[in-house]
Image 1 (cartoon, rainbow, N blue to C red):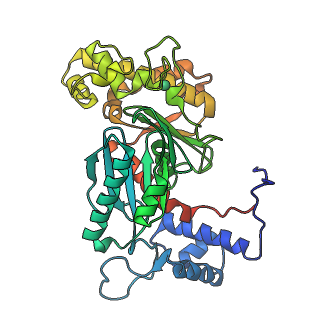
Image 2 (image 1 turned 90 degrees about the horizontal axis):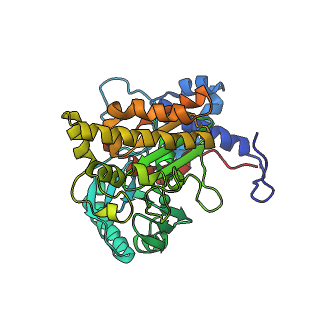
Length: 402
Ligand SMILES: [Zn+2]
């Protein structure tokens, strides 16, 4: 049961029920495409005539097209319904501490070309300038991708209304990314915390395999640790966009110094830096842990697979600390599913029993200890898919009535 807001309500007007049915039809086409009008009518449980009205509106709005996809074959062409992705694209931009990635996708998040990358500049103004230069270059050299529906930007840190309020890993405070990007590109721009965007992309995934009801969480373990939470398909942001900052919830108040300045945060135990420092026997505290040389988590995983016991032991320890943090997450939001991504997922088969052991120890009930955890491989570019979802998902959202 959802309470009606007395400050942001929208009165139901004539046509509202049609609007709701149209969004239901659009989402059914998204998850079942290709689908015929007759099949859609059957799934929705309404008459063909009613479906025609809804479908015609969706076609007129440019959201859906009817016909054969791709090359037309000989003989009868199937008149199936598809989400219109042919003439428009979304630009996805992922800003992390080390590099900026740009990808052009269709409006369902499918990549239309290879990922472009450049090193993250130290100054925010230079960053904006370089993004604009790259976006212009990509769009000018690929006219076949069609009109750009918008730019989705994801960044590590706290984002409120398009402003990056604080990013411990980038070391930036109060940077407006949306306004200058909008002004120079003349395109719609959405800026969001990268992990909040990741969970949005899972919820709005093409086949809709994410649970539709209850809380779901996305945990990204990289330079830092970010968590995005959606409840019943809606992003949980809190009053100050702070909801989900489990990376900075302490596991131990006397633990190593974290990038946020506090001690013993979850991030200070499981980030890439923390794992590398533990392996090297170095101080895992910030900022010393940022200068540990060229060793990567991937290399430690390779050594563990090669039979090196120190590497295996280090990864298992990271797994155990991951599980401790998952237990906090489970006790706070009791999610139906937790997605996890980051370099450490490359070692999941080696560390999963240790993750689960810690979760079972700390969770209060047997059920909570068995909360589903699914890995999202980095080569699926979850952050870029999240950025694309910022542009494309609003079209599929339920109407905001009452
Ligand atoms: Zn912290």
